Length: 289
Length: 239
Image (cartoon, one colour):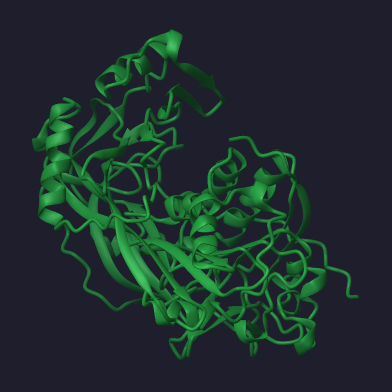
């Protein structure tokens, strides 16, 4: 059984009760996609576009512009294939986080996607390119874009997880080259004003989850927030969670891997968030040569 | 762009380690990531050659025969190899760790000759493909082991073992089979604002332009455009 060690500081139990929301079924149709295409500055004209449909997504393409909607989540990805993450081999984007964040917020406001009060700056991540000879000579490095993540807020509580974000990609000319939105539509409250349980109680879920595993899990950090899944999840409820960030280290500390476990945070949650570990059939023994 | 070449694919993963000299903390989702890659590559018509997990994954599959290994029959007998386990990086040498000794518990990059036979692309999903993004460190780690392989994909520092990134392999396979560039798809798919995974892809080239061209444009269709000599490395990463 894995041993759990808390090396960081657990957060106090949030005092304020929170709601659980139903999430609306995503409206991923050609019509909805064309409306969005217009918002993104595309013509949305069927004559000049291609619509591709698969089990997971709908893709609207006009030349080098591509708009994808994910059926399960309603998440959106818009990319300009001629500029998104493309290196022109000369530009070097030097932009501070504050300026990048302001530009991203302005773009989101202009597109009238969501009210600015429902989001906050999370992080700016830069795409860098570099080259050098095998001896490390003639080394060069440049930044070719910045991706700005804006985090969703629900009832002023941050939305954590792979979803609950708008990511704006700015190219070296500070123009938007891509946009990702994982932001499921809220329905009515399913449960109102439910008190939070303690992080210690949630930690017991984590220990139970890893019962069949061996090793030491060091919990370094815990966050509280609504938890939203990623592109492909058919999530039905949005509920608060404790998110545990830990490290699996070898005794000498030279070999490490991080781990993440998400537990429900309310005293009366809906189900669980991290699915139980699957029982896996062992492979047949490999023949020795 | 459509992909019109078929590639051979092999994957190895370790979740459960023996409680002996090979002991490491158990992992939970390494198989999900790489078997997802393996199966989706197969769904797109590519050839599934091997999927070795836990005790079936051996360090000799990555160790070159010059050092007594069998890499030319396994990792280097496919075009695309993906491995997910514990990784470490010390003194500019990357190591992959295995669940049991066959023959050793780990293999170091000093004993790898990636691309000597057929290997074109390798994705190492364990931690610490590089520890930082200093050019001197990147070339010190990878210029030696890259001996014909076109692109190495990995992480800067640690990576997360998480249910929430379990579909990385299948997403990456779908993207590169749709014609996305290998380095671009990796850096985009493997980076995570949430988990803190920082991705890097490193391309080899005979010249600076060759390495940059591979970093920016290489797809699965580049299978047979060999790297005659790794004189330059060109990389991209998001942090």
